[in-house]
Each structure stands twice: as structure tokens, then as C-alpha cells.
Image (cartoon, helix red, strand yellow):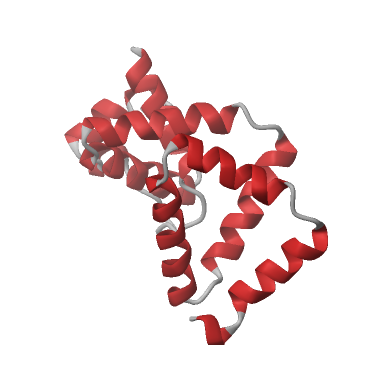
Length: 154
């Protein structure tokens, strides 16, 4: 199996968490030909996978197949970074993601916009902003976060 398919399979296996599957799962024959080709390494053990896992992998394969080459490259890069994290770091990422998912839609939108604005900064500006934040005292960080969460600021 080539490295692109291996990376795709690994990404599919780990990138999608949660989700409900049909009680009987998904028969291998019900996958599209493109999904079957992408997941060929899973063919022999497909029927032994839990129904929820089959659903996750099938959805992930579909998402992978809909991605353009740039999106696939980004997904591979993210997977490599994920694999480089310690168990503690992964747990922290999962906790932050869950907290993000529990935010009201307008707060999630505000965070996405803030991140887009940060990404528009030059590398030098990002470094300086990170340095300034890192140099804040715990009390300053707390006040900054409280100020960002006040309804009047929205």
C-alpha cells in the first residue's frame, strides 16, 4: 500500500470520533467502489469491526474522497502532528475541542474569526503576539479572558 493510502487510512481511522452507526453496521458491499479501493486494507477484517467503527470509517472515507489535493495534504500534516503528541497532549486537545463544541454558535464564530485574523498576521507579528501573551502575568491572562467573555463585548 502506498504512503498516501496508508496516511489516508490512518487519518480516517483516527480523525473521526463519535457518531452513531446503524445497529447492523455497514456491509462491505454497501461501500462505494471508491471507498472500497481506499479501504482495501480493511476488507478482510471489515465484518469484525463494531458497527459504530464501520460508520466512522465509511464517513471518513467519503470525506477523504471529497477533499481536493490541498485539503488531503493538510489532513496528512495534521495526522502527523497528532501522532507526535503525547497521550496527555492528545487528552488536552480533546478537552479543548469538546469545550469548543459546547460553546454557543456565536462564540464559535468569534473564535474562528479571531483565528483567521491571527493567521493573516505576518510570521513576525505572530511571534511578537505570542511573546507578549507568554509574558503576561496569570492575573493579566485571567482579566483578558474575562473581558473577552463579557456579553457587552459581543
